[in-house]
Image 1 (cartoon, helix red, strand yellow):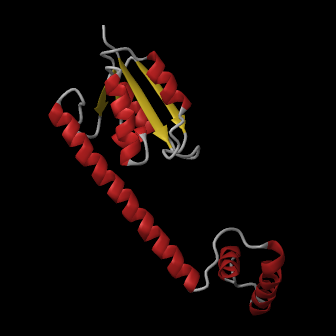
Image 2 (cartoon, rainbow, N blue to C red; image 1 turned 90 degrees about the horizontal axis):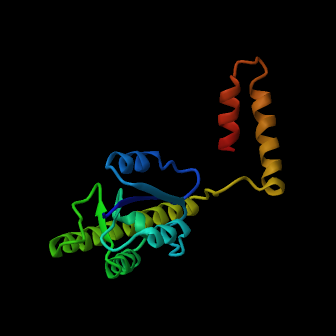
Image 3 (tube, rainbow, N blue to C red; image 1 turned 60 degrees about the vertical axis):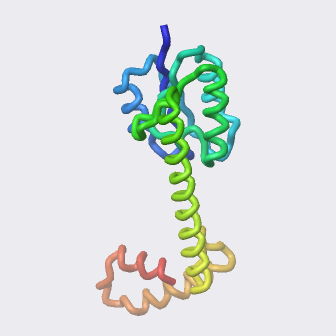
Length: 179
């Protein structure tokens, strides 16, 4: 008898996979595999373990196809490997079932659109960071030695402005963060 196995993936440990796991369990899978690992890495231990467990005719169920990889090429390679082993793929949020030619076509179109969306987000993020750098904004934690004297000077100015004690602690913190 063929089985259905769920696979979830989130890129970083601080991301919560609960919604993916709940959706997979609700779909009635026989087991769930998952991991906290970036989609850029094709070496994913839990996905490899899942592929060793699957037999011809079994189906891997994912919340979205992009859980299998970051780029269209990587996802297509993973799916081709699964299809060669007789393992089917089903997405819960996309109309994809790789057992039919139409399902494979829909999958390829959706994956191409998802990759384009990721590229656009990356371009917008990069442009925003470059704009902020040009405006003099720094990223990351303040440099202790370089930025410490500036923060002390800012604190002294705030202290002098607030001799009557009218500023709240949050106002002081906000003003220091602006410095």
